[in-house]
Length: 360
Image (cartoon, rainbow, N blue to C red; front, side, top):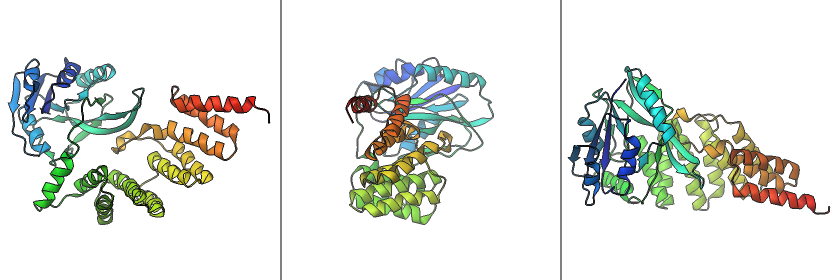
């Protein structure tokens, strides 16, 4: 059985750190906590779980801090968690199974990262991240922000997931501030960080700047396919915010130059036509979304609702607007099969019942 070092970087995490470490209890063989300047009880809480607590001055570089944590690891593999991450019970069991069966020749274990949830706790946003990295195999974190490790050697995809449960907001300007400091220092952002810089600008409602960054990223042609597709969508979002609706449609369609349609893009196209009250065209794209195969292992951002609930509930509305109530009701029931407690489904059922009860 392999051994695992849990390597964390923390700062002022007194409200969530114990929850995280309790969820990892019994799964890992050592815990290393790199503290980057806490002024609360973070180090005191960490000391309940480990004696490996290292103080590391923060210098606006997540990779530097993570590499520091990994440098102290003594086990076969390094695993990272953020303080507001948890391993739920089914994922703990899956993690132990993996630990008992993993081939030691494997270099990197990829695992789902669940970061978005609906009101009932169902996952609405997920993507794979490198979660276990073979120790002392020459792989290092890179990127001051949105840091990542480039896998080398054999890679496997795990069944256990890590769940991200924020308890308090982080500094919303931090990532953008780091990127802008790099640019001001003359650093030329590589394609992956151009992409994430564009997203940070978008999150800050700087539509024109974000659009320019995304368009340059796409035009240079050096991006990863999943980032290219996402960048097309973000170009469309920016153009819509700027009132350039027709150009937004073309930005979405550009995504098809990179790979087969994703359900997420089809749903965006459905939304675009729906907003134009072009319900037949909207229905076409929502129907196409239902034919798309979900493949989380491609590595991109995944919105699970786009592969079932969202296109079904929108098809219900489209066909209702088109006067085909039989088809609308059928899609409402399909949406209900995906999400039984959805208030929209219950509301629609009441509506359809009322229509049936009313005289023609």
